[in-house]
Length: 190
Picture 1 (cartoon, rainbow, N blue to C red):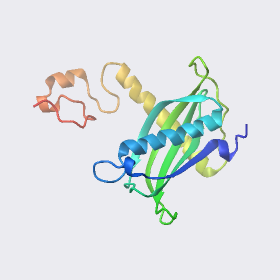
Picture 2: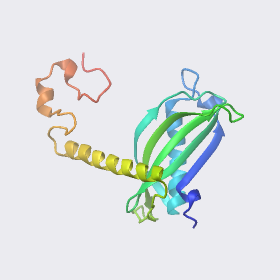
Picture 3: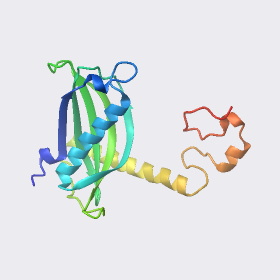
Picture 4: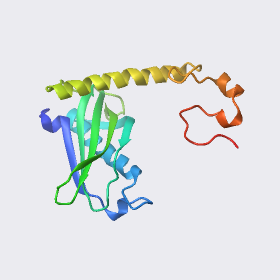
């Protein structure tokens, strides 16, 4: 299989349909995440030549809404490979249907793992960056890997989260409004 540009980058193009609309009339964030997953999957399968599963979705940035009727481009680029994982950066752009005035609307990091027929991870071809931009994106992916491991260690240690300092003891001493960790967005008990 050719592992050139076609294997390391995929672009899906389509029109945002009325069925993609959310409550405010633009495309819903959930639909954009679906597009991100589909573009990332196409890139992962194109690179590995295997069935792949989504292992991680993060660093999602919604910068502009997508309007119904816009031409949407979901571009997925391979930025790092592990033994069986592929780290992919997906960028969503939208424009008028004639392709003019394209703007980036969202971006997301997503990790896929290639698996065999039994569901076990399998090795993927190593990706080597060619351009300076690809090298920079690979370095950023490695930084995100280290950060995720730090966060996971904080959760599994059962003590303070290494990033927030939040502990179970802190929750016991906190007022009812503060009993949720600082990363929760919903209000605490009333």
